[in-house]
Image (tube, rainbow, N blue to C red; front, side, top):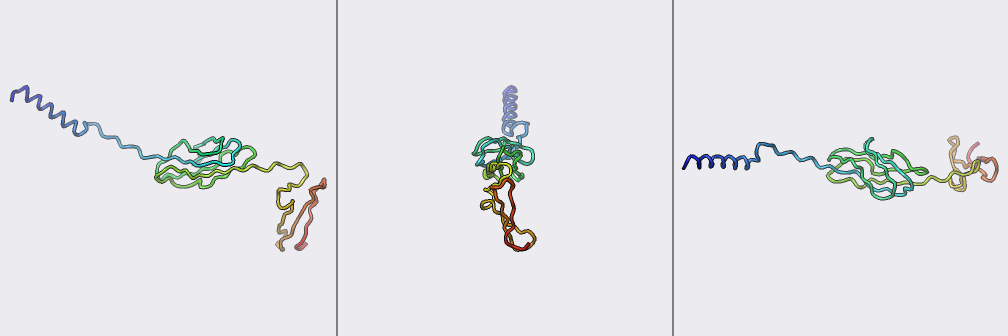
Length: 164
């Protein structure tokens, strides 16, 4: 073999060997998979702020699906809470805590209900109890009923039944 051919052959073999082993740069480790936390909002008629893990806030203005922007890795914990209630509504969270598995969390349920409108000053809210009647235990005795007359200027409370 000629000297020039031998050198080309050696260089070619060296290049093939380097290409076969991937060169000198290491293969990067892939990032672990990340998953989102989300669910569904029902009954909302305003603006709501949800919070995951005490820091990741998400504004919600309509009913339907939601998902927090920050993804979490498998085995991370999540805790969804209501950071700000909508005006004249109360929202609660069900299935809002857990540990991330190997899929997105999609079962967080946020339910909002409207507060009853306030009654005029000095009147009895008849949506409370049955016609404004409340049953309670005043002193450890058997339950007694108390009622008020909503028609008077100053509601009167009457104790009926039970011990005095």
